Length: 318
Image 1: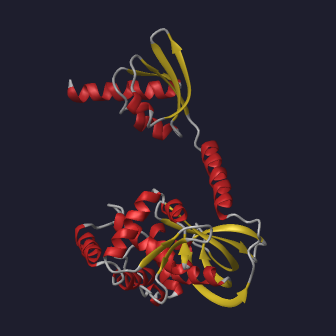
Image 2: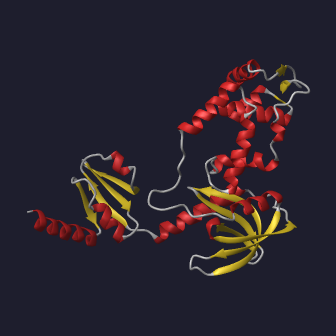
Image 3: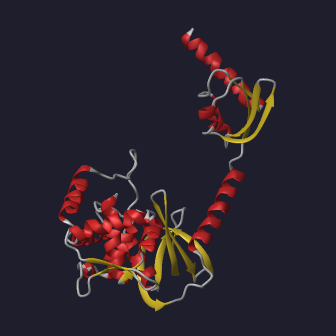
């Protein structure tokens, strides 16, 4: 949305003092031409933007002018950034309220037509990320975790394990990760002496210790999470492996895209697929929803289940 780009341009120009159009375009993933159009819009709205050429040139605000973005404090700017990670203006929690206050301050700096856009968007669009059949778990300690991470302060937490057992741990927060609406804390556990991942909904209390720590320079949150995610998937595949051999007499591309196909073999006009259905129980559910022209070849136990199911259905319907 263009209004978001105008906000970002104001934030970047005011915070850096001067920035080149190509750097703005790169940061905002748009064209240099679009950046100059946005600059014209801001200038026409009465915000004195200046552009200078040369090696030391760039886009800046007229000397002595401010759009009052500096009235945003550090936490508010952080919350603006975190809004892209899962905090929303309507969220009824501490971080959501901080974000709303920051947006209200920022809104005053925009040209009048764009203030109206924001008001219309707020009334016309609603983001509801809660599942239909259950509520997202409460995260009462999330703001405390974020603050400790940002200030590089150690924390003492009470963590609830999967079996319900509570444990006390001293942690050095390294990062927060959001995965499909669930929040995870990556941190060095001094109690265990190693780097671990903690599900934030299981952290029942946080005590800030105001003891500073330093994250190793070679640590990458993205790389760490990617490696743990890969290990998790490998473990799940090893634990949930149930290969099923099916024969397809005609293509079903939409169905294939939803299956974990491990191997494909073409015999004459038939396609023989080896599909992972994770367990016998899950396979029993899935095979009964397959199109009628698809035949399950193996395992024999699954074929017997299908035969028994068909016989039962015949007794009911015929």
